[in-house]
Length: 251
Image (cartoon, rainbow, N blue to C red):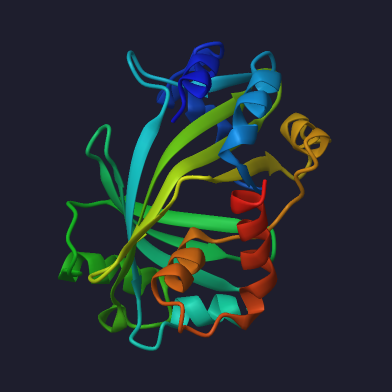
């Protein structure tokens, strides 16, 4: 990450992880955007007065590592490819700055609403009985069908509205890997705006619109699958991939 971005992060007032608990949005709408890393300093600069930043004593940028699980037939990938409104993902997520690890089930209820269930476990690339018990309590498909699929790695900035309930995640330094390959997209930034449906216009969305950045539904899990296995059927995502290419490499 550039020194300019790091210096801009220091302009935000800090908020602790505990204080961020006040920003848990149980009835939330998630909207994703993408941009080139070159655009990020200006976007952040315009948000410094209306957002706080998650921080601890030394860090304002936090590293994440996720191992996704899927079936042999890639059910979770193809549910997304087929445009199913109700779908899910299974992953271990590790917070590298603290070492905390959670097994998570991320359920998409419709096009905009997401629900996440998770329990803290020690990380394991092979699902143990305790992991399977948790998954079986939440899913209609047997946990025994799930195998490790791909890793996603990224660094995250988290912002929280000063005077409004809104949370922003900004993912940079995005990488994907499986047993045979590893790919990085240093130019790509994925932004997610999380807000309560009852709130009005999102201030952060207003900043993005000024930069002509429009919503685009993109999943790191889907993108990683396609980049690591380009032979995988992905015609439904062709336009999104072209948009990512244009933003990352033609900007």
